[in-house]
Structure formats: C-alpha cells, structure tokens
Amino acid sequence: MTDGHWARMGAIWRFVGPPLRPSAQDGALFEAAIHQWQKQHASPPRALILGVTPELYSLRWPAGTTLKALDASQQMVDAVWLGSPSAAVIGSWTAIPFADNSLDIVVLDGGFGMLRYPDQQAQLLGELRRVLAVDGIFVVRLFSPVGRTGSTASIFADLAAGKIASLDALKLRLWGALHGEPTVGVQPRRVVASIREAVGEFDQLATRYGWALPHVRALEFHRDSMATYYLTEAAEVARLAGEELGGFNLLDITEPDYELGHCCPIVTLQRRG
Image (cartoon, rainbow, N blue to C red):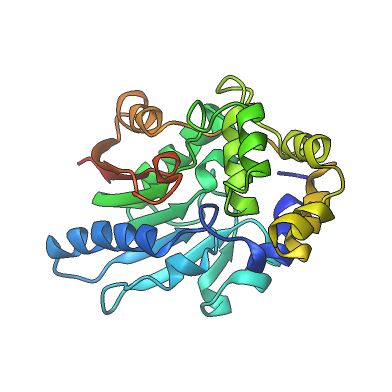
C-alpha cells in the first residue's frame, strides 16, 4: 500500500479491537497450532510474525523460541511492536529477507487480504514455502466475510437497532457486503462513504453508541485512501498453497465461536517435504 495506510494505522491501533484484532480465543487457537508443532520437534522453533500484532508477540511461545517480526512500516513498528527493536525487520512479505529453510513457524493475523489476489497472495505463499523448513507451519487468521454479513441495508438496520457492538464489527460486516469479485476486493474509502451516507457526521457514532471518539474520527483517515483489501476464503488460500504452488498441506481450518467468528477462520498450513 503506497498511500501511507499502515503509517496512519499506527496512530490509531490502540483503539482497534476484536474482531479486527485477535481475541483471547483466537490467541488460544494460534497457541494450539504452535504447541502441536512443538510436540513433534525437539528443538524450540524459529518463528516469524508477519506484521507486529501485539497479541501474537504475547502468545505463550515455547521456551527458547527465537521470535522476529517482519513489517513494511517503521511507523507501525514504532507504535505497536512489543519486542526488542532489533527483532523487528523492515521488509516486504512478498520478498521475505530470510534465508531458505530458516524458519519453523510463521504467523499472521488478518493481513493476508491486504495483498492483491491472486498474484501477491501467491507470492507470499511462495516465499513461505522457501523460508519454512520441511514440516514448518504457517498459521493465519483470515478475514473472510464475503457473503456472510448481510446486505448494507440490513447492516445499517442492525446498527440503528443497537445490534452491532463496535466500530470494528461494523467495518467487518461492511467489508463483506461491499466486497466485489476476488480480484476487485473492497476499498476502505467505500466503506467509509457508506457509513457517512447512512449516519451523517462520524461523531454521531460516538454519541449514539458510546464508541471511542478518536477511533470514530479515524474513519477520516480512510476517506482518500487508495488501499484495497482482497478478502480470501480459507478454502481458496488452501488451494493456492496446495494445488497452485504444491508446497503445503492443509492441517486445519477452525472458525472461532464468538460473534462474527465464522468470518475469521484460522488456517494452518504445513510445508511439504
């Protein structure tokens, strides 16, 4: 994303919550996949977080884990990363600056759909096949709301009735309603425009629903954003990784049981020999 999207996100990240950030249940599912890998290996894992998600850093990693992060935005690292500055590498997910077979576990929360479908997503999976050792795993929480969150009319009817718990839930539902074909995706600026059309001034969201005013006002950040999200289904990610690239086996797809959890599956892929 060339318009400073993630640089601006760093300034408001503290206001973002589930389902756009991982919940405790999501963390437990990541940990289950990690500890299942550890049961089958004597040495502690060499692990990489794609992005700087605090909840992934704070997982109960096995003793002795070597943990690094890879993010394209120094501003996000400065604003969000909880680890040592030296452990956060600036670089591209589609050209990962790590050696072949040098990692055992790679985790990612939500960011897969920030890459263009299908080419950039396939590039990431190809890079993961390269940097992961044989039997290494990639664990990713996807945003997969397309066709699962209702129409825009029903979403704003639920909002008016007080049935949407947070701005983050509203965004996820609108992503699902406004997403085009897989190669078209959804633009945050279009989501913001639909909210403005439905509710008027953004401050009304804080007044009516008690949502944090700085978080609500951060919608302005997206009004002129050139970003696009390509929100891919779990089965399609597994197909790209397994059939297209031939590099991964699908170990698991789990849908959390919280509200909108069916839109946030956690997928575990294992590097083939």
